[in-house]
Amino acid sequence: MTGKRALVVQHVAHEGPAAFAGPLADAGYAIERLCLGDPGFETAGFLSPDLLVLMGGPMGVPERDRHPWMEGEIARLSERLAAGRPTLGVCLGGQLIAAALGAKVAPGPVREVGFAPIALTAAGRGSPLAALAGAPVLHWHGDGFDVPEGAVLLAETEHFPQAFALGASVLALQCHPEMGDIDDGIDRWLTADADYLRGAGSSAEVIRGDHARFGREAARAGQRMLREWLRRLPA
Image (cartoon, rainbow, N blue to C red):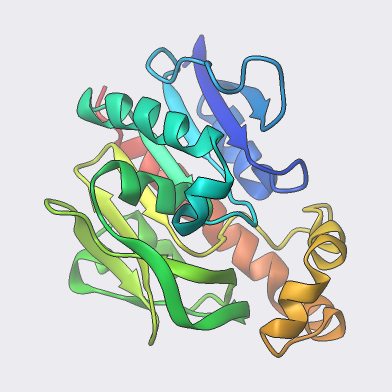
């Protein structure tokens, strides 16, 4: 497969596709990155890319009044979703998908930060997320999404839905299955979000230790999940 374009939207420079880049390239996608602050970010079209991938960031959908660009991104995302175009969202990206589909995004009872497994639903066990079964994937959030009308819950933890699908073309993730490789930029996360980390009752030392123990397994599971999701996309 050749000639396909994946637009990866990064809301902060250090939260990129990480381990997801390999499966995207293997599936024939040329990756184009669009970062918040780039010229044209607020007007870039979302309909034309063969695949849209929305990454995470420290800003939250409940704070959209503090981030004027967010309303425009949600509006353009709504158009893409209405057209049934393949779309993947991670953490903030998943929350933006939920908001674009009319679902609530709000702070949860706790901040989930660190490596931990997710619980798959029956639907999740029959989905590409089956690749994540038992894997301690990275969590880094305090907000969470409700599952939009018409979508299917695929995974959850005690406090948050973790993934939903809308048909075969839309996947929203709360966790970060793209993270875990040595070169995934985790040190930049730890530096940029040090206060957030302390507020979650964790530390850079804990995250680094768990990254060394669990990261490779998590990233490989995330890659298997993405490869299977891409394989199932409608032609």
